[in-house]
Amino acid sequence: IDELLAEGVAGKRVFVRADLNVPLDGALITDDGRIRAVLPTIKALVDADAKVIVASHLGRPKGAPDPAFSLLPAAERLAELLGKPVAFAQDTVGPAAHDAVNGLEPGQVAVIENLRFNAGETSKDDVERGEFADRLAALADVYVGDGFGAVHRKHASVVDLPARLPHYAGYLIATEVGVLKKLTSEVERPYAVVLGGAKVSDKLGVIDHLLDKADRILIGGGMAYTFLKAQGHEVGTSLLQEDQVPKVQEYLERAKAKGVEFVLPVDILVAAEFPDLKTKAPANPGTVAADAVPAGQMGLDIGPETRKLYASKLADAETVFWNGPMGVFEHPDYAEGTRAVAQALLDSPAFTVVGGGDSAAAVRILGFDENAFGHISTGGGASLEYLEGKTLPGLAALEG
Ligand code: 3PG
Image (cartoon, rainbow, N blue to C red; front, side, top):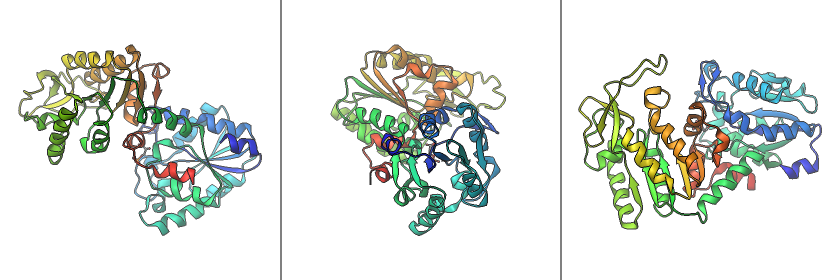
């Protein structure tokens, strides 16, 4: 983007593909980290007197307008953070978007409605995506890609649109790639990786890759139960991906052969029911050994012994990558595991990268100072796929 700014963008219509896919509670944004992360790029363009068009997806609407997924709350928050008005177009490529863009004076900003209200955005059909990209291209003169969280998606606004306009990477993408590159080259050891979150299937690629990189891999969250099952333990009604058990067994064996240490929970917090995240009514969980989850009970967080164990495994690490919460941190009774990992990262002198929409949000929602961490990535799937060594379509599109 510095190159673009040096060329001059005064009066030009600049399309910024951001990732404003923020967690919402109704119309209330519960974590605005992704909006703040793209501010440097937007501010630089505003200061350079560009006409700035900000676009993003939010959630997974079904290719048609759906008020539950409107970007309006994100546009309002952006206006607050910028300290200046932001126009909002109630469609993406229709008359409202054209009116909003035509109404921009140099240095002004407009947000267009959720890109995924159009089936062409996520279509697997190149022609359909291309047609939508043509309509987006009609709105702008220049493209700036800065939605790091979406660069692993082969979507119209991520891949097809930059092919139609002069294109540049924004500051956020440059920072994210710089940090993740460090984790894929020579890292300071011990290199510890903490993986959590619900689904083990989302993490298999990165585990496969990390078996050649990391020294220890700590497992928590919903995915831990598939690991416990793979070790022959019963997991009650906990989240379980039975079909992934053989793959996990294979990874456990490969790790042993390579001298990579897998660290699994030794105790967990259990209850008969999933907690009520709305009322946050006390859940009164019990603590059980990880190999003794009673029938009819589900694991919802790592237990106190595991918290200590994981903190000790992180204390002497020189590099840490963390993706995914350790439990249902949205409920106070199940937040301690995630809190303990965040605290261990803060206490350790290691270079720490927190990746993932969920773990990044968890860190902020639990009240930690995000600036105290080495780097908090705005990308969940994107940072994982980067670490898997995959070519990310949205980054390739900006290079071409
Ligand atoms: C994310 O939250 O990881 C990104 O915004 C991408 O969203 P998606 O998984 O719905 O494509």
